[in-house]
Amino acid sequence: METLSLVTLLYVETAAPSLQDNTADLDRLKSALLGALPDALSGRNLNIPYKCMGRVAAAFRKGGFRGYAVLTVLPWQLDVVDFFQAKPKYLPAVALDLGTTHLEASLIDLLTGKTLAGGHAVNKQIEYGTDILSRIHYAEKGIDGAGLEQLQLSIVASINALICDLVTPLGVSLHEVTALSVSGNTTMVHLLLGLNPYYICREPYIPLVNDPDPFLCAEIGIELHPQALAWVLPSIGSYFGGDLISGILASGLDRKEQTSMLIDVGTNAEVVLGNREWLIACAGAAGPALEGGVAKMGMRAGAGAVEHVVIDRNCWQLNVQTIENAPAVGICGSGLIDLVAELYLARIVDLRGKFQEMFSGQSPEQKAFVKEHLVEIEGEKAFIVVSQEHSGSDEPVVLSQIDLDAMMRSKAAMYAILTTLTGQVGVEFADLERIYVAGAFGKHIDSRQAITLGMLPDLDLAVYKGIGNSSLHGAEQILLDETTRIRARDIGQKITYIELNVNQDFMIRFSGSRFIPHTDPKIFPSVPVFS
Image (cartoon, rainbow, N blue to C red; front, top):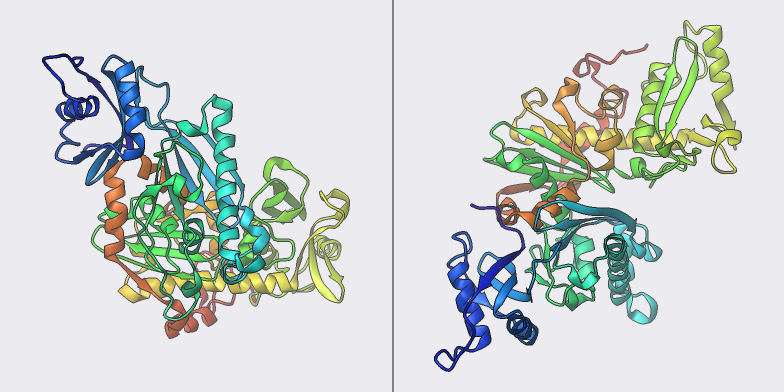
């Protein structure tokens, strides 16, 4: 099938009306368009929406019955939504990653497929709750019982502000943006649409909608072209959202002959396993300690976050790298993984994930290093990553034993999720052609360090491939390619979803994974084991 953008331009030129040809203007336009349609668009109903009739007819006549029609392309219908006398410089549309705490968007020119601008912003809903569950509860009540309305207004305001930031430097008006694609988890989509998410977190966990039909952005207050269409990627259920469908699209997992895996770590760890014949998926709580939801000094990847840590065990020096080289104010997921792996290799953390000051064979340099960095704060052991003097705040960046325990639970949950999923279909890790790692986790993580912890399977590093913000990449593809829009809906029909909350096998595997690298070190042959 030919690549077709969600919105396209089509040039038409026809004779002017006369006494011999009294065809009405819009009928004349439709006739000309039907004659000019490429094969990929033929056979679809051609419609001019009521709200567009006056504007389109006036522009068509003013242009001398020639010019460029703007058409929204649906599988079953073409809508003429505008008309230009001259070919516009851009045909802009926006792809949106609708995150729980942050939004990220791309401004795409549908004429060329090029990205004109990109940006991100805080999701203003965060003032009503930092996580999905708290927002679901807020939606039930809120101020004066209008919680759901307040949450919707908040996210719409966030989106409008972000898109304005994208278009303004280019001299493009918001009303010139012709389409919006949205990729987000099921709850966030409900809140965007003003739909009650009450049943998402209550047994049997059934959302109001998984696959919303396209609608006009103006219907929910997003201030784009009056006929700008919003296309929301479908969900599979309460805990498997369109953002993970985007990840499958971006990785091409559903088209591969060989079996591969997709891992996306955010608030939850979401994992898909499969190929072009079958897909199986699950989600579990392995993300919060990596995102800043558990560790006291934890934070999302951003300026001042410690992202990489190395302990030079020759001279016993601690080397820390922060994002944008800004003064350290916290530690993000990749930094946390690096740090704990390095502490284990330096034998400052034992296989149980506990700090230890003394161990056999310790050199004087090691003792001095441990004495400098391993301290007690309020009666609890903690490792100083960056001293107060060198931090970007009025306190040191530290890793406490409580933080370390949370990290051990997260890493155990991650590996248990992966082994439970592969166990369901009898696939070995060695059978996987590729493991795609999405999001900030995939962008910053050192796979070698994650293997050391027993968080990811002990495979050749070439198997692992970071694919960035796959939620956004999938939304971009939705704007540009009709086959992708069809694939997004087809994927939902072929996925088997495993519910981990009631999976006994997962709990057994979780218990076995709460050691570094694992209770059974033989499955991590590349990781040293210390007695």
